[in-house]
Length: 367
Image 1 (cartoon, rainbow, N blue to C red):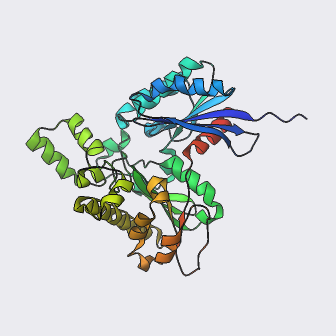
Image 2 (image 1 turned 120 degrees about the vertical axis):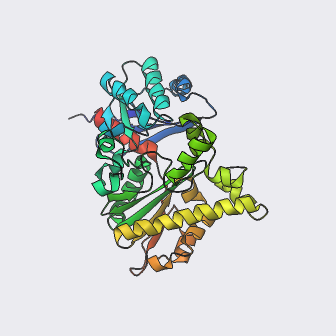
Image 3 (image 1 turned 180 degrees about the vertical axis):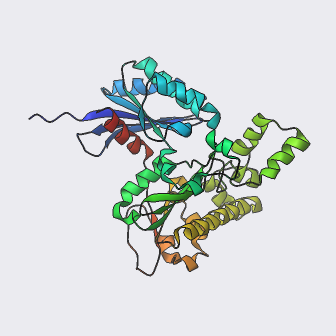
């Protein structure tokens, strides 16, 4: 019997100003193997960058079998990866109010791929899928039932990143684990036996931890106050809460953590921003450990989580009561997933790979 040839899968990960892409070779039942990775930076419309991506791949002689997309939000009706067809596209357009900052651009990417390759199968992989198994008590907001029925609930995000980390951890994800995805967007999830019990982001990605340009958890009365006293409408509030808050607002200069770490010895605003970020993360680790009834592993991922050792150390500094050893946190690195003494909480750094997760689901659904 002749074995099927490996299939070539394009994974697209669109942001607000860039488009990351990767091409994988996927054999029958095998793990995706990266052939190439790249990004198109500083684009106002990621969909407009798709022809440049295809030009690059054509120049390298790559013929695609399918394309997969990271989709931030599937709304209340799409909680598993799915083949993209006209019905799914129409449903996602209807779900745009759930993610007005993300879904229009992601739908534009799907349309752009269709225009370039009308017959190419496409798959949507939702960041919200990972958290769909959370118990109702974690997903329900304390609001009238009618709003729950409309889909107003806690969804959680960074799901593809968490799926990637859990797969890398393997059996080490089976205990009481908190994964901290720390980047410009930041969130955490509490896992018990690999199943999510609680997460920090909620109805939107603006909740939870302090982030690069988002405030994290905020008294809703602040929003009411701003609407009442400053006449701020939904658009201006959205801009404030997603683009002008968080580390950027605290430092008054930047939301970039590496820049803040470099400046904090000379700029008290940068020092405050870093301190508040670490305090926010520390509080959430404590809260998620309470949900789990203890902590066996704390895992850092994302741009800050993987590369900013001073931030990891500061977050862990006062968490000895959870069994976290500061030396373990200080020396954790991504090139070795180590175990720890049974009396301690293991601290690990794991590189995430959302594009590989997209390629895996895409291969499975288009086989």
